[in-house]
Length: 327
Image (tube, rainbow, N blue to C red; front, side, top):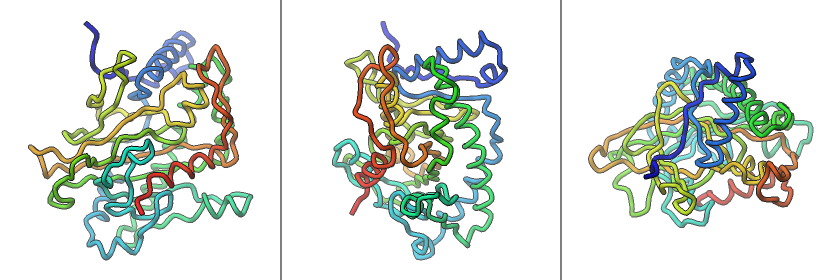
């Protein structure tokens, strides 16, 4: 009888970083197997201090507990910088699912270093907006983003190796990336009210970019991962959780790049559970992306399985971000 759980292994990065050839080969094989099935990994040995994650959460929570009038000063559109209030997003729209708006609030930050092309700079490199009521949040988030950028580079090198490609096959397209960072707050029903039918904290979707690095909290209304029953999967299942691990998943652009050898991990976040309606969770979500203008072309067979038409990374990203915006 097959195991119905999602095939999501935990990878310790320390053997990979040690330089031992046998350990690196085994790590790369495990990564390749996992990304072919669920599109998800758990990663330990990453070197990020858990106290930093906790401090970011504590500062962000102070913001989220402010009155709506105070938060509205920082209101932004999807893909912008600032506060996304209740009802701003419906992630299910990206796959054609007509769900009610997602039951969350977000603080969203991104790359802000100027880009040479003024048109690209205006669209993708706008200044971050930092809430004055929580002045410590900026330094904490900037430190966290430095850690995420370094971890992403290590992961991209591992992914190139797992495909038998050059170590910089992916990372050479990340010299000036437009990474995004969302702090997602999932309050209980005393804040959001009773969920409507078919309403989620985040509706079913796949991420849009290359690699997502998620620091999440365990909860009954938490992350679920989908594996296709037609291909030996189990449908929707609770994702495994390890408080010492980051959850890593592949986005649409990376799946296209690998010719669908690796899956873009489909997932959702459940609404507050009926037996724990006051449950409150917060996720720190780093979205890896390319340098604007990167042409994403499918790796040919035998590595790739499908050949997609080449696509401009940021034309693709803009279309996806627009698709989840609730008017």
